[in-house]
Amino acid sequence: MLRIVSYPHPALRYESRPILEIDDAFRAAVREMFTLMYAAKGIGLAANQVALPFQFFVLNLTADPEQPDEEEVYINPEIVKRHGSVEDEEGCLSLPGLYSKVRRAKKIRVRAYDIQGNLVERDVDDLLSRAIQHETDHLRGKLFIDTLDPLVLHGFSERIRGYELEYRQGQTQGLIPANDELLRRLGCLARPSPEGIFTEPGA
Ligand code: ZN
Image 1 (spheres, rainbow, N blue to C red):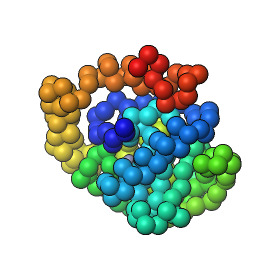
Image 2 (image 1 turned 135 degrees about the horizontal axis):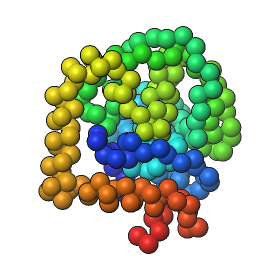
Image 3 (image 1 turned 180 degrees about the vertical axis):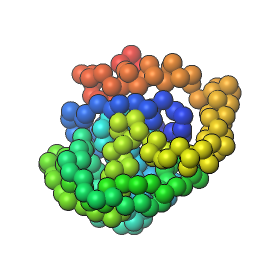
Image 4 (image 1 turned 90 degrees about the vertical axis):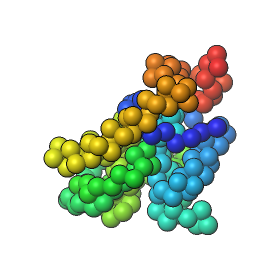
């Protein structure tokens, strides 16, 4: 069972590896991620955020489970062109309650595989462009707080220390495994396995 992990879980800093096969286990993980995303009232969720070290994310800009036609899955995404610059507010399900203006490219060209395994290239702007840039950053281990000016980031330092404290308390109480163990699990998942991509060898 997957769950959304919060900063500073090491999965959020992990450089994900590409998806090699779209199989039933992968489709099940995608379904589970949509369910988690809707429950958290988000519009996007990257695999890192559920501690899966793979390059894919899910989106539904309506955040509405009653609008499944709006669901999109981006597999091994690549932003191949960026144009312009625009600032707008962003949040992240792994940094709950933290919102800030973030500067992003206004328009992008994104290339990714969809859930059927078709390579799709699209030019997008506005919220979709912002969401894709935010989620693609996740797959490279980057969070939106990394893009903020140090002066702006400093304003959030108390809240960020709060996340760190809560996380360490979770580990002390045994609710969250130690970072070494989490990194070992991520490493196991990221290694290609003959039983399928989501099977942890020896688990
Ligand atoms: Zn995020």
